Amino acid sequence: QQPVQSPQAVILREGEDAVINCSSSKALYSVHWYRQKHGEAPVFLMILLKGGEQKGHEKISASFNEKKQQSSLYLTASQLSYSGTYFCGTGLTGTASKLTFGTGTRLQVTL
Amino acid sequence: NAGVTQTPKFRVLKTGQSMTLLCAQDMNHEYMYWYRQDPGMGLRLIHYSVGEGTTAKGEVPDGYNVSRLKKQNFLLGLESAAPSQTSVYFCASSSYSSGDGYTFGSGTRLTVV
Image 1 (cartoon, one colour):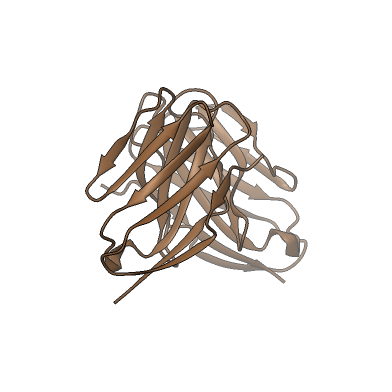
Image 2 (cartoon, one colour):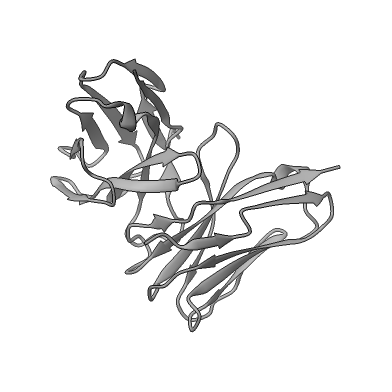
């Protein structure tokens, strides 16, 4: 069963913040986040493991709430380059276990 | 430093024809995957492999076969193409101990008419 992502789409002005959520009905071992620009391959952003670990990458960070089986991706002071579709991928066992991806959140950053 | 290379990038098939998509990685990754991406449905796993000579079914395996005779290559075959297999296909690889996530190929856009 695919994880559920919300919102499905969001439009931001440059400099604004956004949060993208990913929820699963299964007990997760890991959550991955990827960004895909139109016509390109998904690119890995970060991985979170069970234990409630929070990670950061430039102005993009994420958290994993193990009790709720929910992960959130935080984009701070968005830039035009952040535009794209964001996918979460959930794994049940191990850091490299096969992933089930959500349907994606389309993010558009405008001037 | 090529990463994951997929060939071909584009292909048009007639219903009933067969073809093989090739995925090659040069990162010595143990795991390899084939996903298909359709509008509004995200990425769905077709087949995957945890090592040379081993393969397993994913969420949507029907109509596809795979082989991994060498660690660096993962082939996806369509024996008798159907219009429902029109999609963008992505290959990915990962290391079993890595925190670096998947590395994806650039994709193959397949149209079945």
